[in-house]
Picture 1 (cartoon, rainbow, N blue to C red):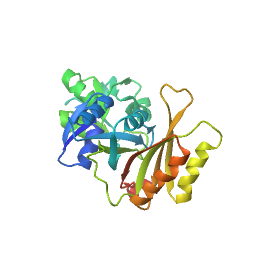
Picture 2: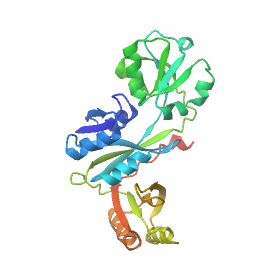
Picture 3: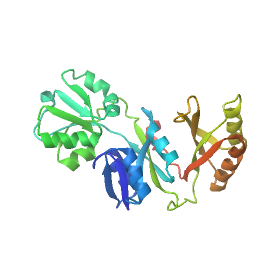
Picture 4: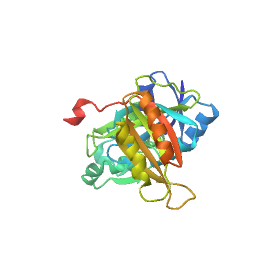
Length: 278
């Protein structure tokens, strides 16, 4: 299966894609919009995207792309995010004065960077991409922050491992396919929805009350502005369901109270490993 990702080979998205489809052929893109365009055109069969990080929050752009494309979430997975200081072979931590990585990764390693004031941090478009650049430049005074897979993929050296501020750092990824190709999991116990309501008192409460009446457990709600319509919003929700049929009932119950309802996917929920709660 050809799977599009945003980022370079060796990135966390690459790791998540292989976790979801072990023999996947990875097709990297610099922009998430390009990955979705490739999926829509049939150039690839699926895309794997990060949707939410346990520390940094949601990836808002990806909610918008899910809404505007004819796709469905088929599966989800959770990936433990472990950051490492990576340099070219032979370099030492004491030599590093510049560190490159995605801004979110840099923000998750503030304590390490504060403890190494000589290191100046620079944002880059991708964690693995920062390692790729590092190896191409062969600069022993520069380093990158990325996952272990990126170091191995580009033949770089891990100088310091586990440098993130908080080890309870997980990212949730979606496997997305064109609606016509998506295969529903009969064990689905989670549904993602997008809906909008009229701008009048009580409309959102009325919609959410319908979900409560069905007994679905609302696990996430996110609002995003409607482009071109100031102060109007799309609401994205995740709900735990007892069966796929309950998901259909949720859609039917929302319809009378919403000006728009779209299912983003029904899938099997992946739970955090037990050690994440200890």
